[in-house]
Structure formats: C-alpha cells, structure tokens
Image (cartoon, rainbow, N blue to C red):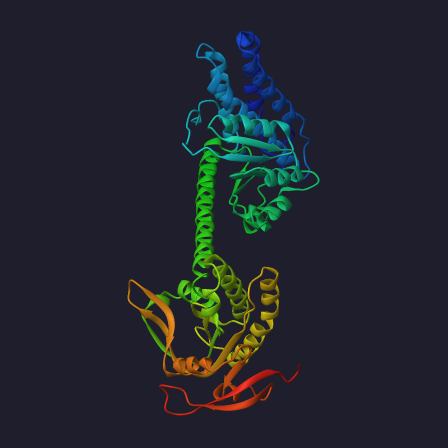
Length: 482
C-alpha cells in the first residue's frame, strides 16, 4: 500500500488483507459470474492497484489516494448489489472491504465494527447529471451508479469538455472534480457561475482535498455543496436530489417569468392599438392605473381632420375609402407617438391627441408644434401614393391649444377609457373648425410657451360658438431654425 505520512490517509494492512481475501474468493468462484460482474471485479482490482502505486508525500498524494478509494468503494457497492445470493463468500469479503474503506480516513478499524449502508437509497426525480473528472474510472463509476436511479449521465474528461457539454445539453446538476489538468475545477466553477444561463445549475464539488480555505473558496465561488472522496453514495443521492429540486424550481420560475413577459408583450401589443404606449404602461405598472377618476393637468391639445372628407368618401367605394383613411391614420399615428403624444381617439377622419398626460414634460407644447409640422410634411408622401393608386389628394387642418383639463379614467367599472374633459377641449375643437387645408392654427396660450423659437403669421381673433370670449390664434409657419 501507499506510504503512511502526514500527507496520506492512514492506510493499514487491514485493507491489504481485505483486498487479498476478495481476490482469493474471486479466483475460486469468479468464473461462474457473468461478463458484466467479471468486468466490475477487474475494475475493482485496477483501482486497488492504483492505490498501491500512489507515491508517499507530495501535495497530490491525498487527492490521488481518495480518487482510488472512491473507485474501490463504488465498484464494491455495485458488486454487492448485483452479486447472486449463492456467492455468499464473495459477498462477505466485499462487505468487509467496504466497511474498511468507509472508515479508512478515520483511523484503523477491524472487521465487524461498521454498519454498511448497502441498499439504502433516496427516491428522487430523474435528472441529467454532468460528471466532470479527468479519471476514466471515476467517470464510469458515476455513470454506472447514477444511471441505476434513473438519471441520465453525461461525462467530461476535462473542464473544457464539460463547458462544451453545458452549452449543448440541458443539465440539471454538475458533479465537478477539483484537481484536473489544463483547467482545474475552480476555474470551471467560476465560468459556470458567471454565465447568465448556467449559473442556476447546482454544482457539487467532489474532491479529495480537505483544505478548508479551498472549500471556502469553492462555496464563495458558487458551489452548492462539497463532498470529500471517497464520498458516501447515499449522501451523494441526497445532494443530487436537492440539486435537481432546486433546478426544477428555478426552471419553473423561469418559465413562469417568460410567460409573464409574453403576456405583457401581448397586452402591450393588443391594447397599444387602442391606447398610447404611455397609457398602457401606466395601467400595467401602477395598481391605481385602472381606478375611475382623474386630476387636473396642463396639456397641449391637438385636433386635426381631413378637409372635405365627407364629400370624398361619398364618391368612392367603401373599401377604397377605408384603404385611403387607414393609410393616412397609420402615418399620423406613427408621427404622434414618435413625438410622445397621447392619442385620445379617432373620430372618423379626425384625430384627437394630447401632449402632457399621462406623463407631463417641460417641452409638451414644443413637441406638439413639431408634431403638427411633421404631420403636414408627411402629406406630400401620402398624396403621392394616393395619386399612384388613383385616389384623391388629401389636405388636413390642425389646431393646437394649451390649457388645463381633467385627465383620467372616464366611464364605469365595466367600460372605461383614459380621456380628457374640460373647457379647453371645446376651445381646441372650435379652433380646428376654422382651419383650412394645409394650415396649422396655434392658440395664443401655446405660442407664449414656445419662447419665440417658431415663426407665426396672420394673427386672428376668432369668435367661436359656445364660447363668450374671443380666441386669439396664429398661423404656424415653421421653426425659426429652418
């Protein structure tokens, strides 16, 4: 056996004697066993040979001893499970060998001292286990042992191969050896836990090293557990069960989160056709967003419609009317939303939009003005496409007015909409009645908030029906920078 010193396990002659007894019993009756059992005995004896060849001293001695002992223990347990009852002598010898191995790192023992945990299992949901170990006997042992409990086991001989398999296959738990050539287990662990997808996979480090600082480093790097070689197989079952359950909970939570995101995208896409993005966000993100009621807001109101649309619609088939109207409204909608306006509603060919609710910004009036100019500029392209299709050209009038309105949810618990009411809504509607095609009329209340950055002309005083005082408006010509 290996030399005994401070860097080795207390390997005793008892283990040598136990192995010799197993070998003698196998020579007597091994020929009666099937090929699988004979192959497992040869692996057992190979692990014993590796244990004998471990040199004394050196920092890797303890690790190598524990690797060999782990293989001895694993193949002993599998053989005990599979040996037929009539092989009673082999069974007794293997049980004695296993008892010695189980307590080897606690000091010398004698036969009969130890209860053997052979046959004890822990029920668990099957999962996909990735075993990363540079020693082939450890990989084979993990695959053979865990497969018996319904797990699908994939193995990797190096850290690089393990990371590649993680990228290719859905893994539930990783069993990771620490001491491997090229890329050691600590680096593999760090890469797993830094990865946005892999970090949720439980990692159980299995190592012969009992260095406390190394163990702490692994736990801090994200290891979910740390087992010493030779590991207790029942304890490993318990750890794997806990790891699979954690992974399943994470997968269910992730699936639920993705479903919520899909539902929210659907809600936003669906209701975004009827409400502005800001209103949808306000409803989804604030519990009070659906409450009936409102508050006073200073906003800039925009109203526009197509001049003479009623006459045009009477001269065309309904499908052509709707095609022409939807093209126009589609283009105007994109422009209004790009300028962060809230579309209150479409009334036939008319558009009612508001700047300043539900979110209020310092440049509400200026954004409304820029939006109106962009809408008029877009009519050239719309009319060019109308001409190509034999449709009439369109001209729109736009009115802008700034004032205080009540903004909020209007209606009942069964049927409501986010809307605006107040005197200034009526004022804007009356201004829009005076707009000619291609014209933008801006109320004096809006012009005073523009700081002279836009050119206006043709100041008018309007006497509008339903409103006692005269309304002063200006024809908007464009930006002073243009």
